[in-house]
Length: 53
Image (cartoon, rainbow, N blue to C red; front, top):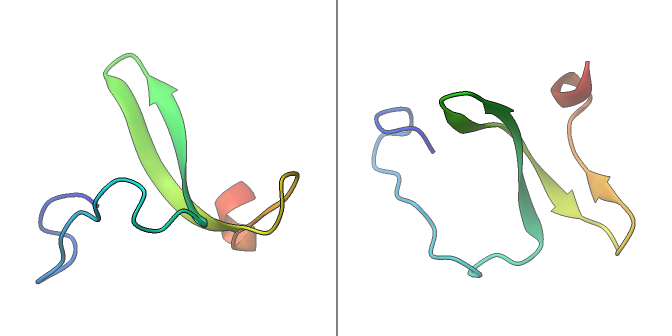
């Protein structure tokens, strides 16, 4: 999460939630999180519709 966006929040340790994914895009300055999703199976990730509009 971006610093300051969630009050009282913290970064989860790697591998703590293996069913969660971070949808990201790359720019010249690095990669950036824009949405999240849940792994359904080896082929599918469930996310909100507005993430892919």
